[in-house]
Length: 391
Image (cartoon, rainbow, N blue to C red):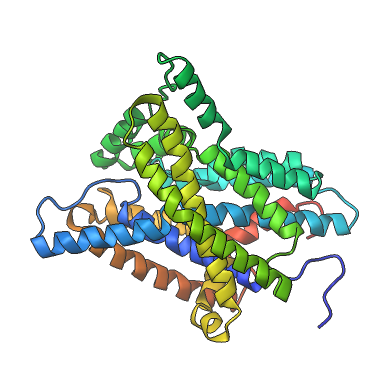
């Protein structure tokens, strides 16, 4: 069937990659008990060893990388929507700002069940960079992405600390906030839990992102996703195949020395450890993210691999619904107002619960998408984004 000239065709590998990212986020969040660090007090030696192995593998593969893929694809999706609007002779800017306002509502819904851990509000705030850069040239977008990913604020603190030993990074009080979040979560009062999460919890989450270097990394990933969309790198072609092979090689080669440098820097004290340590931590995670994305895109060209991960396409098409519903499920499973399984679940048991939740969500996605074009929250977001246009 011939594609409409005013709309980009859906890119299958992007749906699958987004599904992979949301699945990985789900597994990491389960190991973290959705930012509720309560675990069994006593476990057998063999289970403790297994738990540590599970933690190491899952966090090495996915922590800080799954969110990065999610952010990269947020920028790519902006390109698709913006380009579709441009083909109709219209600017997407104001609609996108309204879309961010709606996303803030979804962020509040998710945060209500996810103490101090929501990333959607970060996307709302940092998403403004896409509005500003929407009409920039490809070169300007890529250059800005590189600047953001270099973590300029952290380098400023590093240089300031070397010039003046008295220089200190600002204390944002994130640790104290998380302690308060943990306290009211343990209390088990559902009303206090919801209110605390959408106020103090969201504040703690944003300020933690500042400390962790995620503000600038997210902005860089958004712009990189926009640039990838403009260059149509997710479209299957020999030219793009070679590009992803180069990305895989460069990312794989860069990861080991960046990781080693991070470990070396963390042996220092004071401002250098905090600032440069954050930089190299972000860089080594970015390199590993490049390995994951390039490997996935290249492998997806293989029919067997594409068939094996086919369910991720359904999962990715309902990424917002799945992301928020996993928080609701996680709160019910682990927190005191629900089943309160946190004290009984080490990392291995938590991983198994995460896998079961994923399989349940996949089944629900396939059932829903067999009857509807979009997931329920995706439908609401789309309808309210385009209200007044008849879309």
